[in-house]
Image (cartoon, rainbow, N blue to C red; front, side, top):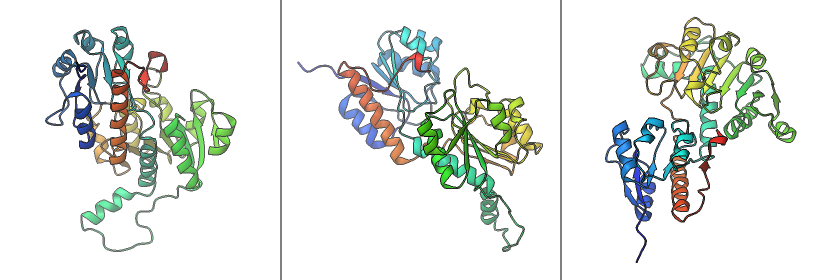
Amino acid sequence: MPRERLSVVVTRRLPEVVEKRLCELFDTELREDDRPMSNDELIAAMCRADVLVSTITEHIDAAMLAHAGERVKLIANYGAGVDNIDVATARQRGILVTNTPGVTTDDTADMAMALILAVTRRIPEGLAVMQNGKWSGWAPTAYLGGRVGGRRLGILGMGRIGQAVARRARAFGMGVHYHNRRRLRPEVEQELGATWWESLDQMVSRMDVMSINCPHTPSTYHLMNARRLKLMKPSAVLVNTSRGEVVDENALTRMLRAGEIAGAGLDVYEHGAEINPRLRHLDNVVLLPQMGSATVEGRIEMGEKVIVNIKTFDDGHRPPDLIVPSML
């Protein structure tokens, strides 16, 4: 007799080609709409599925896992970050957790550079004037931004994405500096033209642009806190395309309003979609709706990784992107 197909529940709408392949391979339950599942819906999904395909909008904590029942054996996260899942508790309950690393490295690095350019060259201000029909013609002193070439870029977190940002910044003529939990190998530093700073405080105080590219962990929560933000030069710019929790959003907002920091480009926020309303009205801030990894190619590749992880698990082998607590 043929083996019973694995039961898979998908929490959000995914690209059509990904959903079609999931349905071909597994007994897949797709989402009819694209709203996030409630906690009760998530618990119910885990109780009836062998595999839950989650996204960053689902926060699966210890309390939720305690009510998940015994059936679910794999949470295949559609995304590189897994800070939305209590991985340690999941493993204690015999539930494996996988992610989709490396897929959106270039997409996110492109967005970091786009934000650096948008803030330093005042692109949103120019766009707003054109859309409002208020442009009256060229003027020598209108919308003066600054060159990125020659500026010092400080990268906080020199993993895959941080290194991709460094390569792009170097092509724009920026000086590349970084702070990381571990120093890169000399040959990698040389290839990137990057200078390592053991002291984050010292690096922050000397940079023209700060790019946040580290994951959210207990040790990186508010790593850019009020004290550290005050070390930044008044002419400096901060860009965040990694996790909003790394930056104290209220402190950043106060400093931007007071002119103590020149500008910011944000694609992620400390409280998810609940953005500090004072940020929305600042001319020196560029806000994006978590678009860093939003490319058709990237989203499909993420789905392909999810499918490989589930198929490998279904075949009785270790999923290639298995997360273990010691990795976090």
